[in-house]
Length: 113
Image (tube, rainbow, N blue to C red; front, side):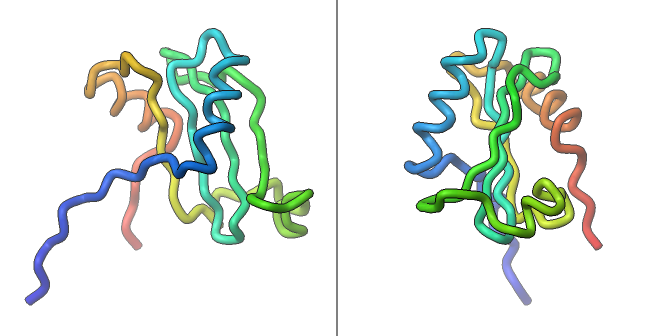
């Protein structure tokens, strides 16, 4: 019988940190940055407001690459190819209840298929 693993919280990687800081700096209404990691290795990021609305443009990039991949150019980083997504909260972070509310609005609920 398999042991249930505790749910790991996804956190920003060091190389994502600079992008997150830049997005927050340019987004006075941002209380966090949504980070979407795609299967192809590309990333999508955008600041989110306390209402759960976009507080910046969506930025797409790929580590150590000039451009995003051809697939992302074609489908703009379809959510169907999302590997991981989370919100990196700015300190002081909103209450856990507010975080859940915003996460649900922005990222939707996780469904198991």
